[in-house]
Length: 360
Image 1 (cartoon, rainbow, N blue to C red):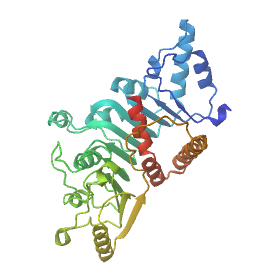
Image 2 (image 1 turned 60 degrees about the horizontal axis):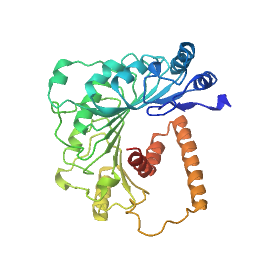
Image 3 (image 1 turned 180 degrees about the horizontal axis):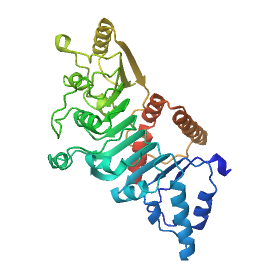
Image 4 (image 1 turned 90 degrees about the vertical axis):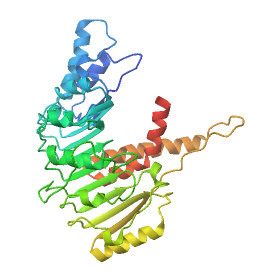
C-alpha cells in the first residue's frame, strides 16, 4: 500500500493530537513519495511523544522525506518556516514549488530564498507584493535570477509589476500567469515596464485574470514573443466587467497567434462585444477562442423553516464526484496539462471559498 502513496498533507497546525511515532514510521514506508503539503517547519515539528528519542525519530523522518520529494506546497506558511523547509529539500530534485504565505511578503525577497533550487521549473507565489516604496528595488537593484524556471504564477501582484519581476528574475520562462483582484492594471509600485524585443524571449503564453477583461494598457505591456494571450474572467468580477474595443487604437501584440477569452457561464459580457472582438481577430489572422466554464451561482441565504434530513443519494454523488476530481487533478499534473488544471481549479472555486469561510 505504501508504494501507492505519492503525496502527503502535513498541515498540522491547530491539531489537538499532533503526529508522533506512528506518523514517523508511516513516512519511512512511502518509497514513491513525491509531494508534500505543509504549513509548518518540518524540522521544528512538535509531536505527541514523550521521549526525546521518539521525537528525534519523528523529526528525522520528516526531514528525510523532504529530501526525496520533487513537489512542495507551502500553504498558509510563515516566511521563516518556508526558509527552514527549503533548506531540507534536494535542490537537484525539487521541480515544483507553491508558496502561499500567511501574510503579505516582499516579492523581491523571493529570488534569494530560491536561487539554490537549480532544478526548479514551476513556481507559484501567493500573498506577495512589491513594496509600497522604491526601497525594496533600490536595496536589491540586481536580484538573483532563477534561470531554470519555465512557468511562473503570481497572485496579488499587478500585471506590470509581474512582468517586470519576470523579466528581471525569470528570463527563461515560457508561461506566466498573473492573478490580481480587483484591478489587474493598477499603477505599478516600481518604475514603468516597457518590453523590448529582448524581453522574456522564451515567453509564449501569458494568462491574466482580473479586471477589466481588456484594457488600453494591456497590449503595450505584453512582450513581443507571446503567442497565446489567455484572458480569464473571475466569477466575482464578471458581472461588472466588459469587453472594451478601441477599433482604430486597438493594437494586438506583434507575435500574437491566439487569443482565448475564458468567462463563467453566467457572465454578462455582451455578445456584441465578443462578436466584434472575434471579427477583429479574424481580420488580423489571430485565432480566437471563447470558453464558457460552468460555475454554480453563489447560494442565497438558507430558507427559514424546519430542518430536513439530507438526501444521502446526493451526498454519495458528491463523494464520487470529488474522488473523480482528485484523481483527474493528479493525472493532469502527471501529464503536464496546465490548461486542464486551470479548468479544474475554476470548477472548484466555490468549494474553496466555502472551505475558507468554514475554517475562518
